[in-house]
Length: 187
Ligand SMILES: Cc1cc2nc3c(=O)[nH]c(=O)nc-3n(C[C@H](O)[C@H](O)[C@H](O)COP(=O)(O)O)c2cc1C
Image (tube, rainbow, N blue to C red):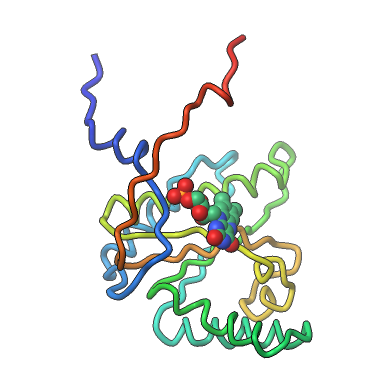
């Protein structure tokens, strides 16, 4: 019989996002654990079709500048520029997960995109397991080619998520569990 650690299943059943994040960011050893969890995803063909770009401290300021520059090129008005400038300050650590597509006869890009998405989820779970809060965000700037260019991400790649991580500033009420019945059928 399997020995079951109830903490493992509770972690999965109770996970939720938290957008209200503050200092301190995960320390170096915790960051390494989070990144290692991101490396542990299901990966058809072992292609590692992902890349992690880490923004902390000055990196967050650079990300703010990137967002503003990209929005300016899109003729955004001042209210929008102010809004995008502040986005990176919503957490003390952001991990940007992008694809790094590989040519493979059996593994289409669609699968590689899913794998990169698993990286975000896995790192969010790791952050949660270590006691931090985290929130997966995208938004229009994820699909902006200038943002990609400024982040050294090829146009042909996808930004699958900005994973905001930090210390929970406000504990949110636990969301109620959703019933799987509506999304499940049996053959
Ligand atoms: C690919 C992806 C992109 C997302 N982008 C955003 C976003 O830009 N802004 C946002 O508020 N939530 C976004 N979300 C949703 C949140 O991460 C979160 O899942 C949602 O608020 C529900 O909260 P929960 O994770 O606690 O169930 C995104 C989720 C995914 C999977």
